[in-house]
Length: 184
Image (tube, rainbow, N blue to C red; front, top):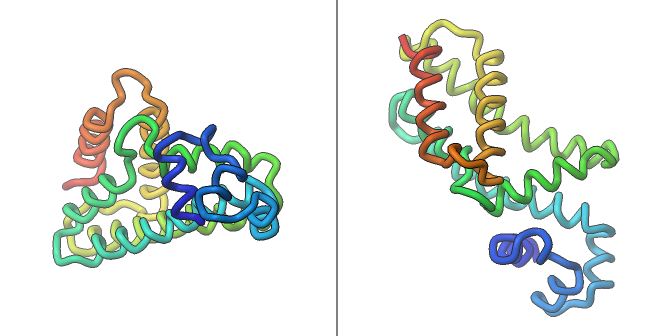
């Protein structure tokens, strides 16, 4: 169900994702889907959690590979930034965050858990790079918070297609920021 929801978002955008349409896609009634998900908000959040689980495995693999901390940081940034306008993962992210204004505490905690995984992995990578002398002596937690804010801001621009902020331009900006602020 979650893979079908993500495929629908990729092909038709969020407007194309309806409970009735998803039900037809997976051979269930929309009522049956509502039994499992209660609301479209819950369906979206669970789809995001599923997608993030897959990205988390990919992130873990790239962060544990034999490479310098700088090379792995570059791979982290590459994985973080959307592929382009209407990137399905980022489209889903933006919608879930937009709906979170009215979300209950459980939904907010689940969103925070997703954010926390990205943050913890980045902090560990930065701490490793600092300890090996590959990076300047920065506070890994503070630097990670700032870098992720930069990545989030640029990623929103890429995902919504703001002119002049394509993926390549954003990656160049982020790499320049890292070179200026983190590399010895």
